[in-house]
Image 1 (cartoon, one colour):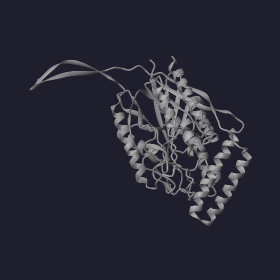
Image 2 (cartoon, one colour):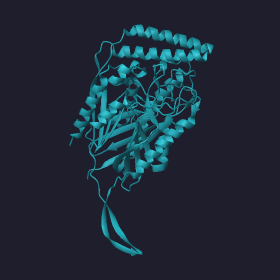
Image 3 (cartoon, one colour):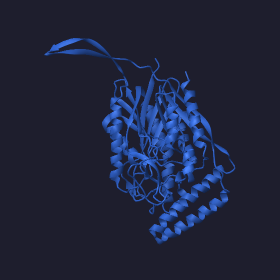
Image 4 (cartoon, helix red, strand yellow):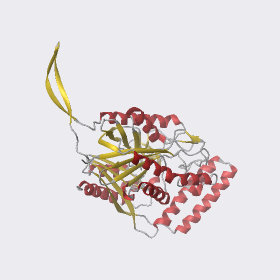
Length: 464
């Protein structure tokens, strides 16, 4: 008899005190003091008689293509799961270790490299552990709302674009939850999907934190049991309602709010539905109707994974050697200011060096190209679809894809299977602002991505 199997695994990937911290241009310190909560790589392996699929949730801001390939390669080598059936997703916490801006590090680079070197096998180990724990499961999904996020594309009273709180901007507060239970209806795994930048903790903190996703997972595991994975949504233009702080109570509070709402949704999910059957009346002062709630074994969900190369249009770039020279000049000036200890000047120079660095990187990768292939992956679990891409798509892209999906439950995510780059809408480009300056993509990229997303969902929905 065909069955759906699931198993979970977890590796502690908490960085050691002294590891360089990264994610903020306004940051003046380099080394993190220690972790406020542990960092994890959490794996869910799903299998049937034909294939296995791995979904990995990692507390990290993200990784470049080189390190992503090393991590996915290590998972494949240890578990033999095909690469196209591995989803490697990052929560995108901004108060974790520096895993992608190594060129700006002048203190502790050896610790960053050792940390990175340790990750492929540690993350692969969590997937291997999940394989050892496979058991028959049923699954179901539901959704609700959580209002900890807000549109972040703000304009100052002077009309200058900034990252802030735009209360009139587009926002999606949908919270999606998938629950996997064993045949005794004991929770094995819960997937929580929500769109919001983990920027609660900012440049003032010297503590490593998994931000609100880590706190939310902890609450769900306390309330529901089993293992919780967090999958980030299309959060390119969404931010916490309160953030950019050094106060750890704020991210823990938002994580608790999200975790408790996710737990409420998960508790209402019945993976083994029941059919009401009236059986009679029991006299007890009042006439009380009696029922048998008979279990109705659901169909075993179809498990499948598909990958498409999306031809994303990119913008034009100046010669990379010119931009790299500018970036090196900025880094030299930054290191000079670090030695002098001038805090305000260090913040400005760090921001400038960071921006110059990603401009040079994009030019190296994309100059001379009109389109680049962006890997889009879809995992189907019955009437549930998990669609993911690298980069940071705007929420409007996710909304369009979900609205055009043939699935009852569609979870669209960025921050998966490596790479960076905002994916703004055409309207976002017209408005300007940070995300449109910090993207390698052209104004019509969002439309291309949404179109290909809907096509892939329809393709995988047609599988037998």
